[in-house]
Amino acid sequence: MNLDQYRVFFEHLLSIDCTTNNEYEIGETYRNFHEKNGDRVIVQEVEPKRNNIWALDPNPSKENRVLFSTHIDTVPPHLEWTHDKESDCYYGRGACDTKGGQVTQLMAGQHLREQDYIVDYLWVVGEEVNHIGAIKSVDYYQENLHDYTYKMIILCEPTDNRLAEAQKGILSGLFTFKGKMAHSGYPHLGDDANKKLIQFCSKMYDVADSMSDETYGSLDVNVGKIDAGYAANVVSDKAVMRCLSRTNSNHSAFKETLESLLEGDDMSVEWLSDNPPMLFSHVKELDYANTYVAKFNTDMKYLSAIAPGYLMGPGYIIHAHAPKEHIYWDDMLKGKELYIQLVKDVFK
Image 1 (cartoon, helix red, strand yellow):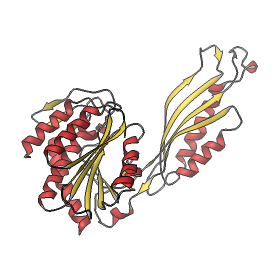
Image 2 (image 1 turned 60 degrees about the horizontal axis):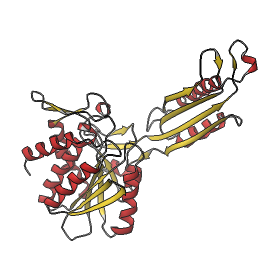
Image 3 (image 1 turned 30 degrees about the vertical axis):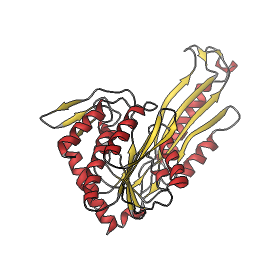
Image 4 (image 1 turned 90 degrees about the vertical axis):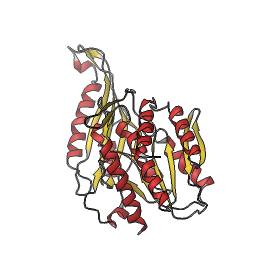
């Protein structure tokens, strides 16, 4: 395919609604694409109408292969795409997270195959919610493809075309505080669950602020959702909070401290996600000057079981999940060249 054909394919991807749990159409799009390209295509059912797509280079060698991968789901809502011709910028859901990166990987892979590198692809579902596609893909690899050995796996996320030397961890929990209702004029007759939540949050923020480190930076807490109380004149008998933290090397210590702050049977936490941070020590061997720490979670925790992982892609993470999510075509072309150089550097 030439650049114009890749542009048309990218625009087609942008038109597809593939929000999480709705990945069937884009999966079929990739199945058809790779079958026409002569790849060995494996459709791996993760859940009904939700498939991972493996596309294997027809080269029979099972050693020193390269695996390009990223997720094919997007966050809701689906946004119709537009194109600003003057800046050659594409707007729409998934533009940078990660449909632009997918096309960039395809362009780089084609070039590398023409130079006799063996390049495979893995498109996974569900990264935006629970990583189920990546988890199931590793199971499939270990059961059915373990004799394929990969020199590297390149995972695409919008990193502004910078190679990540580390990624922060994620700790997400559902915190519940119980109390007793009463008339707000006589608060001593009740037990204020909201007050317990507020006091806990104050301590939690203080702990997080004290746990910065040199490698990953700050430990960032976000209280994303609170469901508490009934009315301003009623003492609350229950408060529930969903909190997500981007963690550093103090991941375990932070988790243990939060648990210790939940004193008594009237306070509890259900941990929803518990992924420690990852340091990609093999990246330092490349001695790249423009590496950085990704402040977001990815499928790398799971996919690194297949091969050493390299996290990089076009687009900027702060534009993802946004009402004007976008990517510049020029950044995709730059990403293509960087992917090609990365593969050559690792193989050297």
